[in-house]
Length: 232
Image (cartoon, rainbow, N blue to C red):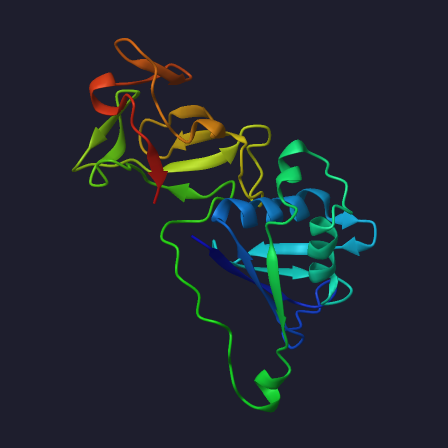
């Protein structure tokens, strides 16, 4: 299923312009456009193309600044033509997977119209380090993670809120999380920390009579073993 997102150009270095246009990005899935955003966020300076002040407005909308509104389209073209050296192996998946439409916005003022395309809405929160979420089972969405005496259990009536943090820099409040190791910090009375490898997709599947999630936190095998979870 195709995934759509909108990137709004806001001028150069704090100009906060909104009259130059925007980009409609089409990718095979959410993971691809998130990877593209993280690529810009990580590199910023692609020699010819330089970007500043990326801001997430939602999982499908973000803003950026550069010296020219054509910078984003130029970068996508170079990525698709394999003309951009990747700094990490995961970014090598991007070529040929991003389609963009560069749309003019001058007529918003001149013609008093607003034709930003309506795109399908995606449920759930964004995936930025520092955000606070609840966690629920994909199989039984009425059941949420609840910290009980330093153990994570699934509960249909109670839930604990967690803060998602980048394991390598827990003070980070801007990085879009892709395949990073993360730390989940319980914000209730337990104040527990749980360390996760993002590649496990929040799946707890250790064998035996329970498994360690990190920092002496355990999960009840009868409650969570073998389940996949999602942020809400």
